[in-house]
Length: 174
Image (cartoon, rainbow, N blue to C red):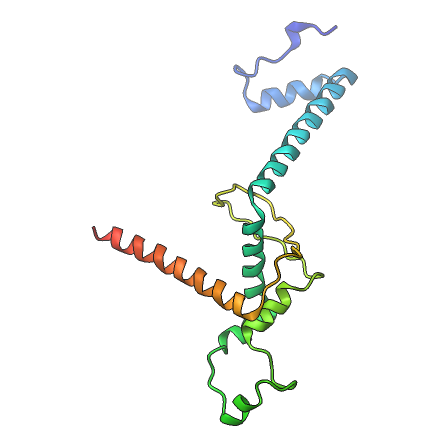
């Protein structure tokens, strides 16, 4: 049994004094077991909170984030920049041929629908879900995208951003 007169009174000691006391008094096996038990309990609670956070990020949001990750993919950046470049009449006539390069929206749909491509979400501290860690965004087999779907989703996202920015702009001056 420990001598209670040797225990530190943390509210009255500064950090150097606490550290000095810890160096002079060896940690017992019982203290180690208690610390390990408390750490395991904390890790179990943390793991359950992570599981709860992921479940709050519903599959619709996961699909949307996966699509945005596909749109922002490094290999598709040039296709995004050049998506409105005018082609010559010969190129336009050949657009249905095998050799014609795919347009941006088709490249995004192909990447999104690739089962082996598993991006991870980016971590934003201001996330409404409060995720402080990335999650794997796996392909959901029932939800495959076509080029038309990608174009529609990008238009919806653009409209939402414009709506929010317009709202904030008008509120700044009212």
